[in-house]
Every structure is written in structure tokens, then in C-alpha cells.
Length: 464
Ligand code: ARG
Image (cartoon, rainbow, N blue to C red; front, side, top):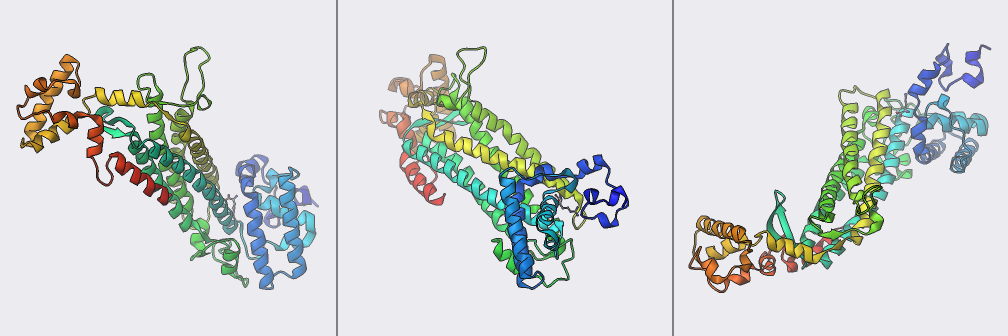
């Protein structure tokens, strides 16, 4: 026997090959270092496949039972750290199959009947992603619940609302937090769509054309908790839309978290001082003793970039790929894993941190007061007194210019001072110039009035 054909060097396709795979090519083409991550799903899929083959009498009872026992033992070995992964066996699928044959002998060689690694890997990745999605859904709900609780507790806390990062109109802190929750609620919808669409079983598509064995695709789909088998064998082994959709969800969700992060970073600064983050979410500086840095939101903001890159990687990977399976697809794993890890960890960090946010109500209130944030309210007041809106806008603009010059907010001006700009202004103007009056007046669905915020928090909680 030549060295190439000795059992030690024989790969699972050894029959056709005259020459051993180049050692570098072996490492270059292998995926076991990262795809071993879904060993549990691979074993689950194999047990379902074997169960179906046994029921259709392709596998006899004895072989079937020893396959299932062997696979369970392998799973225990992997979990105990007693499994020897081999780069020569290329990927998780062939590592496990070879270990099975080594353990149980000939029956192990029958497991791959009516199956290919092409439908196997598509199944494994879907099962794995589905499991991860369920964990991410839970973290997302935990974060949303924390946000809604904090919003409800701050339904009356007044802060400046911004456009162009300039003080615009007063809003309540609760309203601002519920705006964040809206973003996350849409993300949750995207994630649940993704889960729904991915939940079809590719098993049975085999390499690309299906198989000649009497298989029962619906049976394996049921055993694995899929809603149905996929419709087309060529599509089954080549579709990676589900991974792209997940990466799109992750990118959008991280984009949202980066926006929240940016605001948290601003708000903790000594210029804003709107909130305090407990020390456990911050770090100090090795040189500047006064520093308390908001590292968690900064890092989440930074990590969003990975998920954008991963989405672009996945789209580019699939662009122009001919049907059906191509080795290119092995490149789907690492970006997908990275997006899963990133979005899960960032949501976890946020879910832990949000309930610990301490609003500095005085600083928020003072900031809202100092930025002429009730200027629109004064204009609306003038309109109610019969002034055309454009003229009202002009009048209030002059009053603000006066305030800037004399360092006075509108509510700090005397009636006489205000009347220089419009004699229709009377004593009742001071009701609309207060921050409380301003927010309370926006009392409609989606508005910032405390009453509305409380009702919105209630609805949001039910929707989570
Ligand atoms: N490791 C491969 C992947 O990740 C498994 C499928 C390989 N199939 C094949 N015919 N080369 O996609």
C-alpha cells in the first residue's frame, strides 16, 4: 500500500485521489477551527436524518441504534474536551463522521446515505442561527423592558429635545427613551421575520439534485422543529439569504445601539451632565485622575462597524455565485458568527446598563430652560391671539434676539419686555412659556405630554 492510500492519510473521498492533499491546501481549505462551533446542531441533524432513514428502512435497527449512541458519545466527548479535532478531516461534519466510524465501525459509514455535506451544512447553520436568534430575542426583550420601565418613571422628567443638536423644544426624558424603544421594536420585528423565513429544512436536497433513496423530508423537518422542507433542492444548498437577513438585522440593530450610545456619551460629559452611569459600566484613565469614561456605550458604538462590514461581506460573498453549492459558501461562517456575537453581547451590555442610568433631572431641566426651547410655544400663543404664523415667527425671533443680548430666557422677561415685540401679549403668556406647560400641551398620540408618555409606555410594554 502506498503512503497515500494508507488509512491514516485517506480522506473521506480517498477513492478518487492518487495524491495526498498538499499540507497547506489542507489548512487553507479547512473550516473545522471555526465550524466546530455548531457540533451540537450537526449531531442533532444527523440523529434526525438517521431516525428518518431507519423509519424508511434504509437503516436497520441495529445500525440505527449504534449510530445514535455513537453520536451521543461523541457529543459527550466534545463537551468534556476529549475530542481530537483534526484539520485533515477539514470540517465539523467529517470530523464527527470519522469519529463515529472509529467508534462504532461499519454502521458509521452508513450515516451519510442520502445526504451530502451541502444540505448538511445548510441545515446546521440554520439550526445554529435559530438557536442564537432565540437568545438574542430574549436579550432584546430584556433591554426593551428596561427602557420602558425607565421611560415610565421619567414620564414627567423634562429635558431639551434637539434638532441639529441644538435645543429645539422641551420633551420628556421618558418620551426620548420610548423613541429608542421604537427603534428596537422594529428590530425585533425584523428578527422575527428572519427566524420565520429561515425555518425550512434543506435536508434531503443532498448535493444539489436530491437523492434516489426513499427519504421523508417532512419527517426530518418535523424532528428538527422546521416548519416545512425547502421547496427546491438547488436553492436549498445554495441559499444564504437567511444569513444575510440576520446580518442586516444585526447591522440595523447596532446602528440603533450606536445612536443611543452616542447620546449616552454626550449626556455623561461634564458639558451635558444629563445622566450618571454607575462606575461598573465605566473605566478610568491611567493618566488623568479625574476621568470616568463611558466605555460601554463607546465600545458598542465602535462595534457597530463590524456588523456593517459583515453584512457587506455576506452580500459580496453571494453576489454572482452560480447555482448550486460553491466552496465560497464556507466563508459565510465567520462573518455570521461575528455578527451574532456582536449583537448578542452589545444587547446584553445595554440590557444590564439601561436600568442603572441615573437621570440628573436638575441639569436636564436647566438645559431645557436656557435654550429658548419654548419659542415655538410663544409663536403658537400669538397665532391663538390672531397673528399669522409667519408674523408670529418674526416677533418671537426678535424676542429671542433680545434674550440672547440680555442673557434672559423668554420666561424670565417681564410682561413689558415681551410687549415691546407684540402688544397682543398679555399676562397669560407665562403659562405657555413654562416647560411644564409646553410639554403638557403636546397631548396627542405620539406626543411628549406626560399623560401620553405613560399611556405609550403601557402600550410598548404590551408589544414587547
Ligand atoms: N465546510 C463546508 C462549508 O462550510 C461544508 C460543505 C462542503 N461541501 C463540499 N462539497 N465541499 O460550506
